[in-house]
Amino acid sequence: MKQENIRNVAIIAHVDHGKTTLVDRLLWASHVFRENQQVEERVLDSNDQERERGITILSKNISITYKGVKINVIDTPGHADFGGEVERVLNMADGALLIVDAYEGPKPQTRFVLSHALERGLRIVVVVNKIDRPNADPEGAVDKVFDLMVELGASDEQLDFPVVYASAVNGYARREPDDGNMDMVPLLDTILDEIPAPDVDIDGPVALQICTVDHSSYEGRIGVGRLSSGTLHEKEQVLVVKPDGAERRAQIRKVYTFENLGKAEVTAADAGDIVAVIGIEDADIGDIITDPENPVREMAPIAVEEPTMAVVFEASTSPLVGREGEIVGGRQLKERLMREKESNISMRINELEDKSGIEVAGRGVLHLSVLMETMRREGFEFQVGRPRVVYKTAEDGTKLEPIEEATVDVPNEYAGKAIEVMGTAGGIMEHMASDETMTHLSFSIPSRGTMGLKTRILNATHGEAMLFHHFKEYGPYTGEMAGRKNGGMIAMSTGKAVAYALDTLQERGRLFVAPGDDCYEGMIVGESAKEGDMVVNVEKTKNLGNQRSSSADKAIQLTPPITFTLEEALEYIEDDELVEVTPQSVRLRKRLLSATDRKKAKKN
Image 1: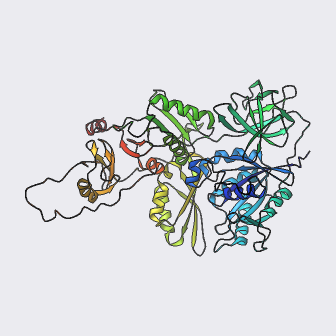
Image 2 (image 1 turned 90 degrees about the horizontal axis):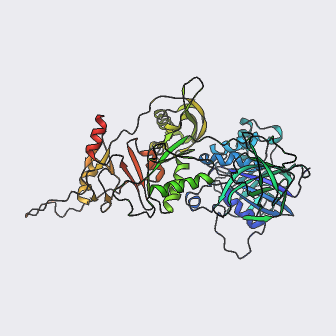
Image 3 (image 1 turned 60 degrees about the vertical axis):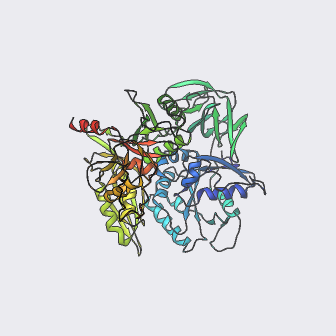
């Protein structure tokens, strides 16, 4: 039976193609906000980091009501590091809006999510956004989407997709690019007409598969999923069937449905709707909540993708510890990460056997750095080692490592440079296509090779290239890779950096500190132009004699120091180095601060 008063639609888009802005416009069009209400732009990017980075990190559910039909909108991340969110939430949808930039057309990240949507047989509505852009080519973008869907093996029915042209920034959607319509009604009508209503059994036994897990400090774990059959009531006794077949009884304390931007508590929810349930203590991805008397045990399993990169968090041992952060203890660090483990299903968080730190494994450096950034904003001060890939062992005993699919879009004149950089990082070219201006390259590359790759590609192509990569599979280990060529400049003492000392040092490499910055013995203050580390004195001052030198009045001119973001710092360091993270600073340091200790360790 079809639930005609509900539509469940996921939104798919490449990073920065206007997905979150489009959702804003749908909310306004369905009168979720009052006419005079002050609303921030990109209202769904509620997390500070989502706003600053301009990306969606967490999948979110909202609903809007249009012509008496409830439209559940599932916002999906556009970045492959958060692909774990995407693969699961598509299980809740019956159709998807594929948002494509009218100038750029579909991009690699679109391909990743779209392939999952097509596999699940979702009805795709193509929304060509930013048609107001100069050089926009809406028809060209539609042709590229068609070619991509053919390549991904779409069915004939999926290839006959409806197209809506939009400018989310200006708040209009159109059936034709120049038909003059100035509101969002055509898009809302298309969702009702083209996205199928959920086909469910209202009178059947309760069956709900948990697709995402949220966590509340008041309520505990919250399981979110689409009710496939039956009616779920609050205070109801249910059977929880784990993916491994284990079963236990539980009571649903509260049932919520999604209403506008939040959740609304209800006494009962009908099949076809997306619901959140409270009361299942160890609710996990893939769990089936069903009727104890007439249980549904068989539903398509939901795979939670394996992490491919891990990093160890430790309490800070820096001489400057406690100056900038309020929370510095190892116990508090452990408690915070264990709380994260409760709610963040896509990360694997475990304490090391020797209790020296907590290992956090995720889908990539960006995935890990988002957690670090969140923690430093909460006042934590800690240190992390170099990220390392998570290896596996095949059945025949061979070592396997994660392999990624990387795509590079680069102007034709720099294609050779890009291929050279990818080759040195272990990339094997699989596909190459070019038009009048751009070359599109795709590579198979070990995850280890992607560390610092974006910076090298941008440097080689004068900032013109666009690089995207996402996990493809585990493949045979490809051998050792060369690390950083240049050595570091290591401070020999603790104190503030002095302009006179930095002036002489900048001739020998690139500096990471400015005059007046706090430095300590073992801190990396710059990069040497040569191989091998060199110990330097950043506190050296000019010896004053009683004669006036000819250069006395020469002003010292320093090149601005290089500042690292968290991701860049993690990708820069070597195995014997650490990143010190505080609420105000990101510093690089040697694991062993004393030069004598480092020499001894080298001998051993």
